[in-house]
Image (cartoon, rainbow, N blue to C red; front, side, top):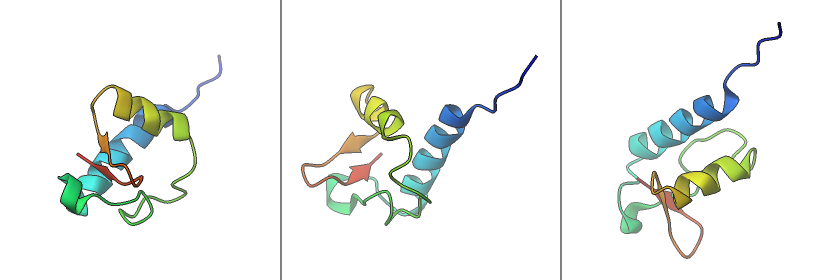
Length: 67
């Protein structure tokens, strides 16, 4: 049996944590993923978009995120 680490779950937790730590809690304080301190912000873009669709995080018109 092969074990695959839960990369998607880890990625979600990291995004939420970094946005919170960087103070991205409203449209006015929204940050890009890179500005929030997320390493390799363009990896697994589908995870980020699903988080937006589910309402876990929000995205501004200029591509910034907040919780």
